[in-house]
Amino acid sequence: MGDVRIKTPNLDDIFEKWKQSAVRKDRKKMEKQFGTKGAVFSLDAISAAEYVVPPALKGAAIYFSIKKTVAPAKGKEENLVMAPRVSRETFYSFKGKNVNKDNWKGDEKVPIYESIAAVPCKTCGGKGYIDDKCRSCKGSGKIEENLNVLEGEDQNKVKKVFSYPCGECYGTGKVQNPCKECGGHKNLYKFEIQPVPFQSVVTGVPVLHSSLQTKYEKEIGKDLQDLIESVEGIKFNNFKDLDDKAEGSLGYWDKNVKKTINSAGSDYKNYEKDKDTQIVTQIYLFPMIQLNCKSKKGSKFEIYSIGSDQKFMIFSNF
Ligand SMILES: [Zn+2]
Ligand SMILES: [Zn+2]
Image (cartoon, rainbow, N blue to C red; front, top):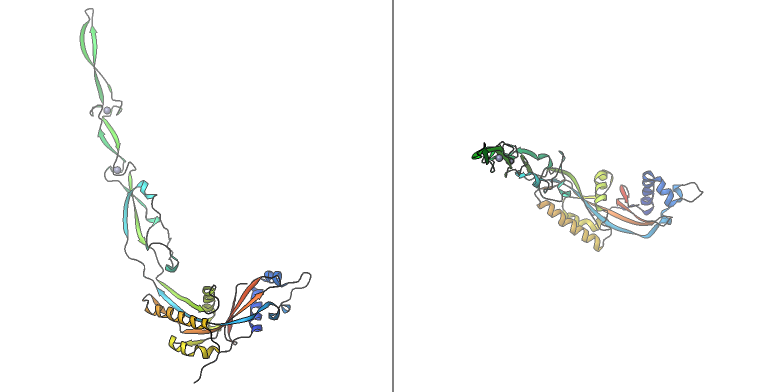
């Protein structure tokens, strides 16, 4: 069996498909970019011949999809601190929602806002203070002082005692000193440092490598994933096969296509080695075409086609 040559869609068909989808998506924008003042807006007047700036660029896209299993970190720690230390910490709140590990910037274990809880201080029994004996009155509650009294006509000197309530303890004999354990805040506060709740399985992550522009690979990959059944490419079970047949299948070849196949291949190998990753589709090779366009108003944009003349999808940054 010889190579299966895959035919690329022609420029007019790509432009037509883009026109239809662009007008469905945002008719006002199309009218603004391509309309004529005073004339009824019509798609027929918008032609590839007029608005595509040659040459059309040919390239290739390689697509496969992976499934990721991410094991969340295990175990949690508990911290018990004085009240003012709580606000020095940065807390996280997930509200039962999982986190995609690919988008997570930060530690794998973090302090959790919802875990903050008051724990009554054991040292002071949750009062915030300790009852100590008053030093001024030595715990008696009274201050006693000698008083000179002269009695009767003879003015005999008699010693009397004058006693009054202690002003330090208001006569109670006790003073309240802030508890050193809780700093007078009655409670200590505990919080947990828990593993970030990573999604355990991320299904169907598209991986796309293209030899044309790289700026939109992520978006194109996602679109492809949704439309994979309606886009025609050549499927391979391994990269060696793809490498052997790519040139014949595409019917054209350049340095960038070769580079793209190599980098997609090493990407694929890394996923094969990664025990958290499983490759869940075959490898697809798609012809790709880039049309550089300029609207009537002068806005530049690109249209990409991916797939064969029979089944292709378009992507545009218009
Ligand atoms: Zn205390
Ligand atoms: Zn006292």
